[in-house]
Every structure is written in C-alpha cells, then in structure tokens.
Image (cartoon, rainbow, N blue to C red):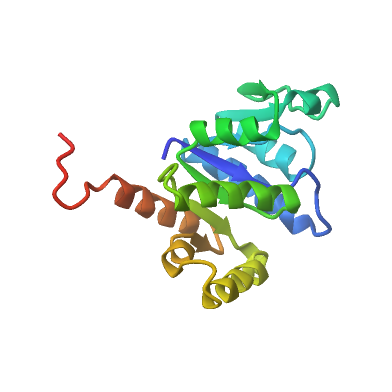
Length: 193
C-alpha cells in the first residue's frame, strides 16, 4: 500500500482521545512510508492527522474544494494540495490517489465519504479495500446497525464481510493489505502476464 485515504472529522470531538488517535495514525503512516490522502483541512482531526504525518516526514496529499479554500479552511503546509470544484470531484480525486480507505471518528461528512467509496466498491467501480478503525468501539453502534440492515436483506453479507474492521491501526493495516493481495490475485483461469 503506497497511499491511504483517511476520512475523519474537521472538528475535534469531545474526547481528547480522538485527537490522540488521529495523531498516532498520521505518525504511524509516515513511519511505514504510507502516504496520507485526506480532505485537505487544517482544523480538527483532519489537521491533527496531517500535522502528525508531516512532522514524522510523511507524504500528505490534501484534496479540498475551492469554496473551502476561499473560507481559509485549507492546510497550506501539506506536501501537495489538490484544489477541485466540488465535493464529488474531491472524493473522486481522493479515490484516484489512494490504494485503500479508512474511516476514523467523524460525523456526517466522514460517513458520506466512506459510504460512497464503499458503494462504488460494491458496484465494481474500484476494487480498493475499505476499513473502519474502531478504536474504543467508536464505530461499533454503526457496525451493529449495518449488521441489522444485512439481516433484514438490504445489504448483501459478502459486502458487509468485505469491510476491514479493527480496534487498532496495525490490525487494520494488516487486514487492508490482505484484501489488497486478494484483489490482485487473478480470477480463476485468468492469466495476468
């Protein structure tokens, strides 16, 4: 995995543990030489993960709509800041630059981003793995709700089981790497030479 797209809050949340988690993710990605692709903001957990990765010498690619740059929300110190025209274009650019996707604590924007790339995967628009960093059980209520949706017949079991979920970054990165290797395996009878 060369680059990981991280979806997370542009606010800090109420618990300082969220900022500690984001800082740890940024530093660890840099340590592992995995580039960070994120929403390009300088505030909240977005700013924390970017600053932490940069301080550890990592590559940070921010992708942000022009309207947010105009509001001075952009992180000007990232390795590369890609400015686009819309939120739709932002997600497409993030997807293009990343090998996998991870959701850290966040709100509506984080949910919207991770669900969109997940639905793209289900529809076959990409084969990049998607994961939830469930530190402290943050995503457990959502994952339980998704299990209920699957049990009701509105979410195929393979789609739900396709998610990588772990309480710590090391476990999540290992699960994403496994899925990347599985995606690269040739289909039965297919020759990739």
